[in-house]
Image (tube, one colour):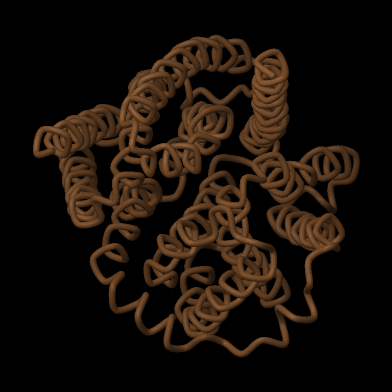
Length: 426
């Protein structure tokens, strides 16, 4: 019996390792294609187009939090370990709010797109559709992680974020008619359609008819939205901390400098994305379950191991990304990028700190310290906006990386302080 138990543990450990490797590989391919896209856009389309693409990424990255009303916090927690029918109904109810918010926000998005050099009416519709698809996909992907389907979640992300890059590069490289931001957006939209098609096929055993036939649970939505007021502000804080920077840069120094910022940001964010998919995101449901156990040492050991793995991945990744960036700079032939290498270095250091801070954030989440979590995230946004604005006003783009480093360090300190205080009070 003991031998069978050991074999079972070995198989589970082996499976966990394989899933972690597969997740990291998928995200590595995604990041490689996104890395290649940044280089391609910088060389063949120009820094202003990089800036426009960065603004679109900023909208798709921050809008889910703005229209989400904090509901993902409850959906993700309540769907852990749920049956497909129960989980599907919760996700459907949550998406009803998302889609309603998207319909209202479209009136605000279109003027932003027009002012961002996307003035061709024929491309505004695909752009809005991409934003809608990405917002819905974000909610679905977070639920997939809670349902312990990290491999499916990352494959879903790979199709959306990277599968279209190589076809776009090949097509636009050999035909100048396709070498523009419009073709890029249409390629992205096609990939979104393919990603959702794959997801429905992969989850074909779910009782979709019963899920869609069920009535929306308005009482649960009202209760959750009412309880999520502070969490909602915290979500906006997290999203703003990650994406509002490019809009501030655009306002202070213009689209070309924003393109330089987004170019280096894409390198630094690749580090965070790789670490998140390989280590951090897969640990969230495990931390939530471990926290429910009477044995608190299990949770502490898991958090400690996750922090160690995150730090190791982040440091190695930061070095590799810096070396790769220096190798590809001569190929791009954009002298302005050479002038702002210090921004990349500061961004990479800040990304290492942010990755560790994200693990601490998940630790607080698993403890149910909702109020502290929200206050920290709101304060983090205020610090980020303030430091970036001051850096741009005082020293221009050169100081932005140091502002990111400062705000990341403050967030890490606060999250660590409150996590230690949580256990000190117990």
